[in-house]
Image 1: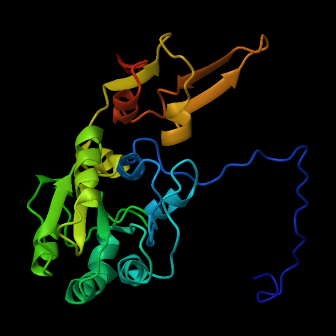
Image 2: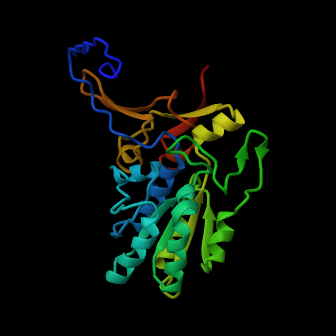
Length: 279
């Protein structure tokens, strides 16, 4: 710009006293996608699977401890590539696609998979908005400033209209029920074909912004904690902190300013209890 306007310009010198700490990208605290990935991992147990994924904030499922992403090419590639993987090998295939991406590029691949009798599970991560790029609306949006409205286009109806008859809609924040549905679909060898799980729970950031919902409850790690580390090693919510004090005593805590109150951690650990959020 300086050259274009023929102005004198001297780049500023920035000196840093120390290196900044690394901050890898992460799913937000309370993100329902984390709960969905956790449920899939629990349903599979020690079994391995192939995870085609797609483009959205849920792509961060590639990171540990979730590690639920193996392949990504372009928008819609999760559904299309899942069919290819299912034909080429025997491992279970569980594909992930977001609600907005499904409307944009996933429907054609789903129709093709039904037509060719591909055998895989598609998890549609429906958080009710286009979360990654700014919370833009899409045809299936329900939360509006005027309140909850019927969607212009219902995802489950679209999926059934594409010819899928094995469809379940779950709330991923209800962990046990979600795991049970996934186990049933993974274990049903008598009914091959495309199976779809619609994992539906709103993006907490979007929900608070649109509805003005006030959070009253957060969660805390109590002294019942036996340091099993399941919360860190299996869930990995960024609201958790692992600390070691000067006496080499380790402990885990939850930052109430980051906690969204989703309650997923409470459902997997007896040592985590609710408390009222302080002002």
